[in-house]
Length: 147
Image 1 (cartoon, rainbow, N blue to C red):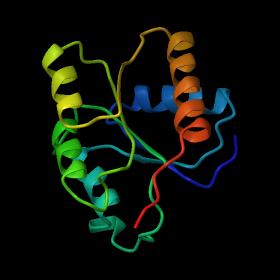
Image 2: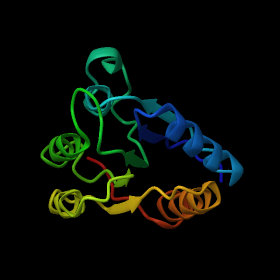
Image 3: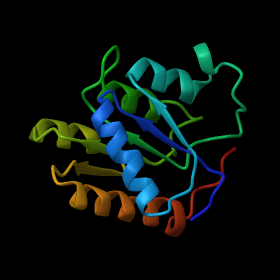
């Protein structure tokens, strides 16, 4: 599944980051992965500020895999800002979290997350979830044109 579109992984837990990258590799999802470790870095990447100020504005992630429990700026606030800006409003966002809070689920969809997935504890289940995410968002889904 080679593709030039990147996946933005917003994950502060090094173990979950490693599991996600391992699962992508296991299923031959060859898209580049940009990893940021807090909500402020995610916003910098998405809006081309801070360390990402020089990023090409035409390069948008194919999908954002967004954890909710993040330092600096939490995942729900990242989602809120993403959806409130015309430049980023249509980027697919998959909330990938270990949270079992019903309010997180409700708020994520209220803020127009495209999907909400609870991280399975078992690696085989997690790898399968990542495989399905990759298949759908990177192969089957037809993204909207960007202006």
